Image (cartoon, rainbow, N blue to C red):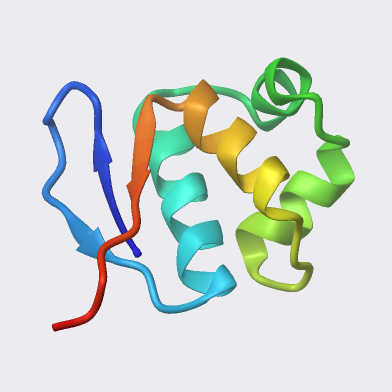
Length: 82
């Protein structure tokens, strides 16, 4: 799975695990100067759970990851393997 931001400010990166995606979410949130509580609220996620997702100590449903990415302006792209 790859990601890109919908403003094309960051390069595409390959995501290989839920931990990678959590790191991406944290890095993007911090780059945009969004407080963890504000992101959690806008994505409908418990702040404590978001903290664990960002640290890679908890995994979430795909729906939760998609809501978080949407709130941060991130597009996730699934591509078939060559």
